[in-house]
Image (cartoon, rainbow, N blue to C red):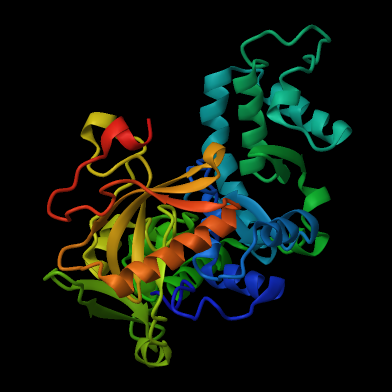
Length: 403
């Protein structure tokens, strides 16, 4: 799993921008998230796999080279542009799913409002929700109705984005600017829409190539393009030929799980290299982390992100980073970028049971922290008093760690 997700290789290897593109292609997508507790999720995910990563490399591939585009998987994600033909099929499904629901929400004139948003983008070029909220409605009256408040105009832009009419041109800060898809995505990729059968086949096959093995639900959920029933039907039709059933043992005494795998899984396993002996700080939205049940089974690591948990009920804190060393999850870290103080604050670290942070491991941790510090351009690391915690007694730190 770590090999398939780019977490096994030596992170010091030279990649360059082409190598970064290959890494994203192997992973399939990089999730985007708005929280900048330390750095945006997509930048941290890539930096944990390549020491030479810099934010400008991703921005160049996305906004200038147009080798990537941004749309939805299970959440907002950055994807290789050659996947766009498959997303054209997804857009059709999204239209069928959203149109009736959103028309009921906004009334019979909803389509006229959608048309107005698309017309505005056509004439004005890249447009943000904030700019659109200041425009006039189609009658020329000031935009003060229910639909032309900021929220509805944002909703219209999101509808066109999720159904293929608009594409994200760029972000400034974290605000999206939308433009017509035909101005963003090269014609060759827009002229290759995938047929329905090919869409299901690609969604399952490419997901399994990146998971290694999984349930029908895990396979379907990787891109979140199709249903678990469609994935199960696809696997069942290929059992004994391309697909086999395997029992995958986990850590911590977990019972083995019966999962689907490619028929050549033994060859794939023998070709997988041992993970590099490196301590890595993973972002909570890392693809290895996001399926909590799978994470618990394979790594015996019980993790949840607590940003939506009321402060008094948090176990560790608002935004906690899992620590991966080699092929083991060894702890969880509370750190925050204190930009006003020009420092990366290390507030707490909880080792996993039976994991000791001796001199060698502490040196590795400091190296990982220093790489994060350099990534976000801060001058120093600052360790709070009593930052190294007892793993047997987790508790969120004082001042709530993130409210």
